[in-house]
Image 1 (cartoon, rainbow, N blue to C red):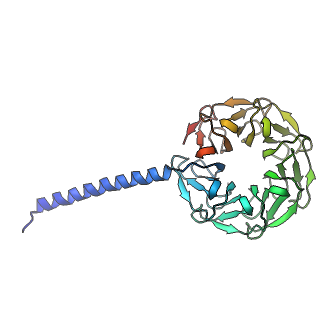
Image 2 (cartoon, one colour; image 1 turned 90 degrees about the horizontal axis):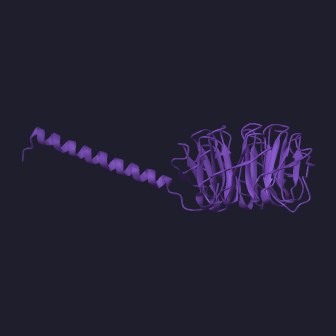
Length: 321
């Protein structure tokens, strides 16, 4: 049978059209799949820039976005242990820590995650790297670990016996750890020695600590507690948060502007260093565990039931992702 040239061209055009339609459907399905995230508790969020960020959570969940949070891709952590903190120092180099002394390392933006031997069995709640080599992890029963080689080896440090839920380092020498009973410890020599800066006697927990410079810092915890210092932690003074609800994370972008997030979708913002805190509408009843801002306008918060919200106007409005 002879097929005319015009009929052959028409058949090819039809096949190309069908192929384009199928590719479009497949792309749409892939995009939808990337955005679907099973409900879980997200513990920590960290963005390297306006587009690229990661979230970690219960059951070893790690998700990544490269479009500011519009779509998310699941990454294989290789563990089912809860992951409680994540930090990237470049768009490729990052770490995650969590239950049972878990520490994970990636050098390719999370395409592959490799376990590191922490030598610890206790839960690690927080970590902070100041460069590609030097970092700390802190957790239960006074666990504080330090690495000089990007996590190839971790060595314990003696910072006391309390459960530490947060740590923050400004550089390779100066840092703080905070935890139960309003305990705060400071080091000025990279963790060789720690000084007690405990902020009170109450049976409260501090969940997050943040320093914008060597003098000004804040910490938050149960019952809406916010404490601030202007002398590097030598003295801590309470601030009126305006909420009785637990606050789990605090971040500042400059000495004046910061946010604290917590139970039942609570978001509090200050523009005067914490002298006054004002509520923002998160649009969610779910507890928020972590917040991260890359500047004074753009930030994300995450928490229970895979809640992920974003603002591009400093928190005036928050959009669910």
